[in-house]
Length: 102
Image 1: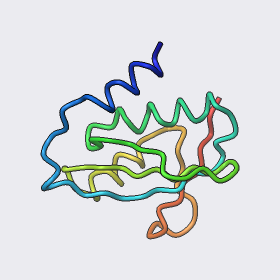
Image 2: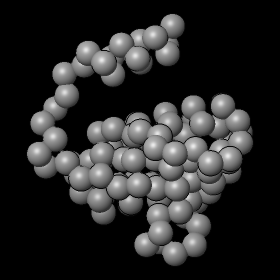
Image 3: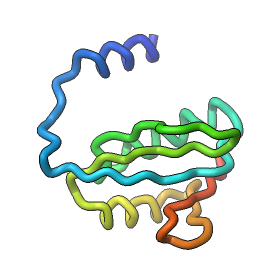
Image 4: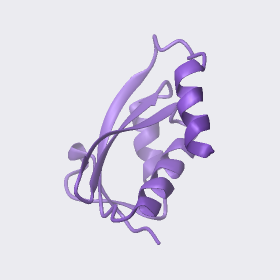
């Protein structure tokens, strides 16, 4: 039921003006199960500074998400740093993170 509702809302929802929107891509490793993917997607979508969180690429246990914001990229990066199960990995400019689901 949830997947049908999501598909319909994505197709028919009225989208807000995206003129001021910015998009950034993050790469998250350690996404091993469907439950991990769902939990990560939900946490990203709940961030107040993120208007939309779209999976862009799945490569093994790594998922690339495109995050759309009209609050500024710096605000999104700060919010990501507050998520307990998401840890920065490597150079911050690369926007790589590790997920510790479960």
